[in-house]
Length: 390
Ligand SMILES: *Cc1c(COP(=O)(O)O)cnc(C)c1O
Image 1 (cartoon, rainbow, N blue to C red):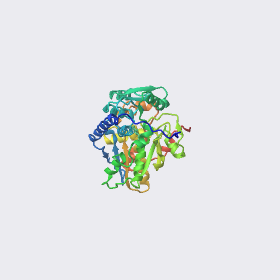
Image 2 (tube, rainbow, N blue to C red):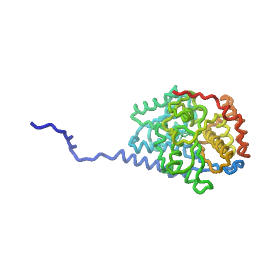
Image 3 (cartoon, rainbow, N blue to C red):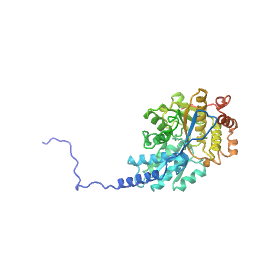
Image 4 (tube, rainbow, N blue to C red):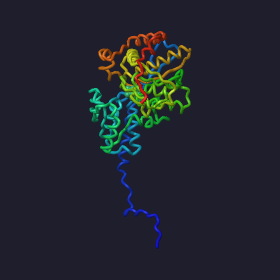
């Protein structure tokens, strides 16, 4: 008897190697994505003048000038590259995302460039302006009644269409090459190179996915800089409590009013260990800072840029109180043109019970004279935390 041994699978009848169809599509796709990068100059790092801030230089990285109008242009490009280079996104792959905001707009743009179907899963309450922007690029919007359903619905649609869930909240932190490759951190530090204080004392950034702050925090460590990272959070968001309590299960039941930032749950792309400090900022302060900065730049910025700018002023005031000098960097995340019917509409502010005047006055005085009068403003005006550990 012959002992049974492992059986070798039969060789294919003809020695033929597989076609390279998928790879040639991927090569063409990468060319197109790189073309978008080649046609774009680096975004400006602007240095506005604030006469009151003696010894402190302020820099703002202007991400509103990307072809799709926000910092999500970088993220969308990275998520597409990530999907293609992992072999998940191929010719004809349906792309799905959970986003009612800037990410969906930027992704719809790239999907159009690559001729791929794109579906954005969004709450039914999403503004018509946003829906129109996605549809203009040929994307489709799929609505859910409960905003908490967007993730599972996006995953389901991707399964059913044999498509790919881009999943910004999970992949933002890993789709971006944190060591360099012209990521936002590398670009900022390169542009700062010949400034009076080339290594900022602090970089200030708000968190939506958390991906941008993760990239900046990692890069600071990688390049062995003494720069620190401050993440600013908004009223209705889980990040701040999660950071303070070290509890990544923290949740917030109310939706953030500052678009693009603040989340009901701690997103997987939020990396608390590279954050040196967090500040929670009242929405009225964010919007006041948005107005003040817009006036001084002669153009409108968005709400999350206001959050960033208020945090930056807070840190500048602390530095000045300590007699410290140096530079501070933050971001202009998008333009204010998107918010004419919300933050820039006085009726919207009234309806949302947002009084920006005290903060506005305080900031104007600070920027012109260096006097920062925070008494009675920040801490006791911050509404009670509605977060609850989940
Ligand atoms: C996404 C977003 C942010 C936050 O960036 P993340 O990298 O997602 O944390 C800030 N502002 C706007 C307008 C955004 O769309």
